[in-house]
Length: 161
Image 1 (cartoon, rainbow, N blue to C red):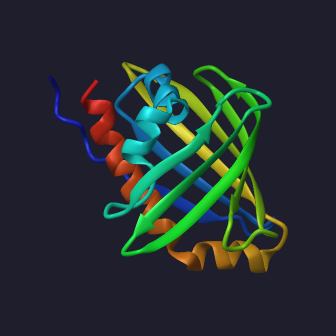
Image 2 (tube, rainbow, N blue to C red; image 1 turned 135 degrees about the horizontal axis):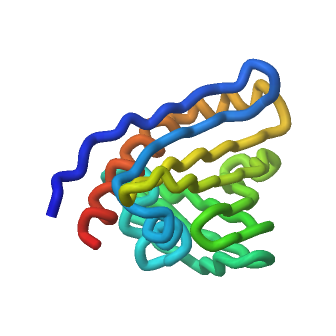
C-alpha cells in the first residue's frame, strides 16, 4: 500500500460571476472518487469538517433524485438538502444545495471528475449562487474549513479501499 500524498484544496471566488471553484486531486481513480460521493455509507464518513457528526435522512444520488442530511455538534444541528439534476457515473454530478439556515440561498453545484491516469483524479466543483453578497457570505460561513477537512477525510476513506 502506498502512502497517500497530501494534495492542496484550491478554493477560488470567481471575479466575474457569483461562483466558487474548488479544485482537488486524489490518489484514486474516478470510479472510487465518484462512489465516495454517491454511496451514503461512504459520504457520511468524510463529508464536512472533523468534529461534526453526520446523519443522512435520505440520499438518492441519481438523475432526478434528492438528498437531505444533518451535521450535529454540541447540541446544534445544521440541515442541508437538494436535488440531483444530472448524475453520470465516474464523471459528473449536477445538484442543488441548500443550507436550511438560509433557505432562500440555493446554490447550483457541478462536480466534474477528470481521469489523470495512474489511478489519480482531479475533482473540479463549482457552486453558483444568486449574488456576490451570497457568495461572499458562503465563503465567510467557514465553508473553506469544512471543504478542506472533508477532502482530507476523503483521502483517508479512499486509502482504506
